[in-house]
Length: 107
Image (tube, rainbow, N blue to C red; front, side):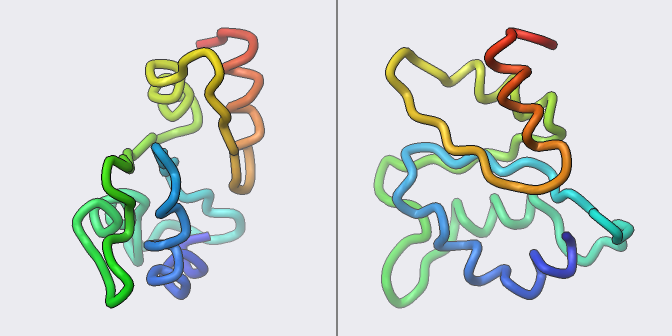
């Protein structure tokens, strides 16, 4: 949700700091409308460029990318996946379909 992302923005910044690659999809609105309060692009930009007193939000060599829609995120993920990679998908709404798109090589 947009409001939840805005409230926990600072916590989200460091949540994926140990990942090799974090792909942030568009925020699922749930019962809200996008009022411009916050965007996944803002989160990605802040993660990529920022740091706090504990250090950078992403580890050295770590990468954060904006995925876009679930379908666009699947395309980004598909372009990066290599044999032996481990993928963790978290989110709300239709993000679960990302797995089907990747495993079934759907567009």
